Length: 149
Image 1 (cartoon, rainbow, N blue to C red):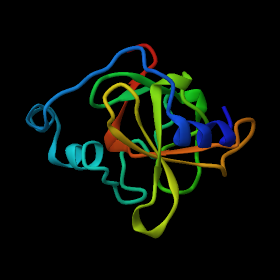
Image 2: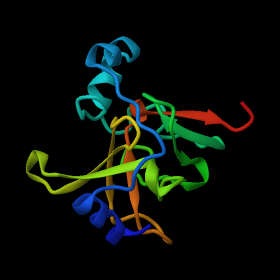
Image 3: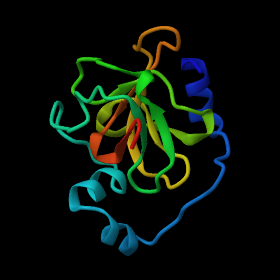
């Protein structure tokens, strides 16, 4: 996975997920806290350095808060200094959905859970090798399942 792949997926469509989860807005609101709903269902963001997982360094796996899909592994997490949990790549190509985002006068690539379309954050081409990618993810959209739990 590299920046060219990300741009291709954003332009031509993401790989098909293994499954799809759809719920009504009422079901999502009943399942999520108001802040989780604002971020995952309304494409919000948390303030930098405010998320509980920003500085988490425990071994484990990160899954979508909304549907439980495994998204990232702790071995792919790094400290980007940006204020959000950052990862170099997802655990599989088909767990992330990519879309061009032109909000706030910028051009970015939004990343969502490919299973339930929860907004996760954005991906940028300024990460460390080997992928060169930085998946900048809201703590409120993922949960850490610590190794051994």
